[in-house]
Amino acid sequence: MESDVDEMQDAWNDLVGLPAEPPLMRSICTTCRRPQTVCWCTYVPSKLEPSCRVVILQHPAEEKRCLRTAPMLQIALTERKCLIYKGKKFPQQRHAGLTDILTDDNSLLLYPSKDSVDLDVLLKVDQVSRPYNLILIDGTWPQAKGIYNNTPALHKMKQVKLVRSTKSEYVIRTQPTDGCLSTLESAAEALAILEDDDTYRDLLKRPLKALCEFQIHHGAVVHDSKEFRIKNNTYPKKLGKRLTKFLNVLETS
Image (cartoon, rainbow, N blue to C red):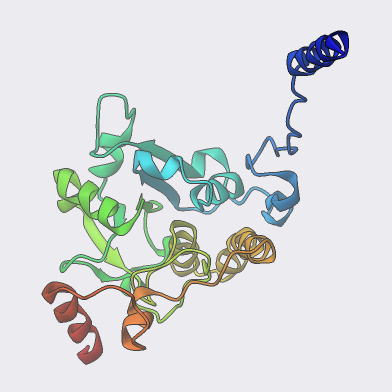
């Protein structure tokens, strides 16, 4: 009887000592770094080369998000037509060439400040002597505001905004208001206007639509904007005075 117990103990020891099987690893796309089952690369247009150059100032936290739109823009445009600089304030010593871009008279900052003008009123790119540099801030709205406040060079730039009533198709991420767009959508809309070519709007949004469809198919839910939820009494948090005032301004504008 004792030998049976010892034999059983030895068997358990052997079992414990066996190496665990490695977890099954999902195949990852080397381009978009997404799992192959939800890779959106086939929806990205061939390298587009607009006259304008898109320059993205990206908050470091944005790079860590698994659902981002800036990579779609970087892959869709030729290398020299899409530049990405990372940081919380700009320019820094490591941001080669950015100082010249931010001080260029033909650089436009897409940011909804009180001094921003409607992008539609600007001359199209074929009517100006040099193409525009289109500057976008990539991050959440608080992060974008922080970058703007910490970067005096941005305050001196010509600032523009999109005023067309376009609702974001980035439906798997909550937007502050119905008029807020992702980095990719903002660039697509701006290029369509400045280049006077709607194909930029259509082609650049294809991978974003595919991403959202993939995520919803795998269990993600459609997110209404905070503005929509507040107006329909489905927002779970109590509103502060500043947000309430802001929404009142939106309703009367």
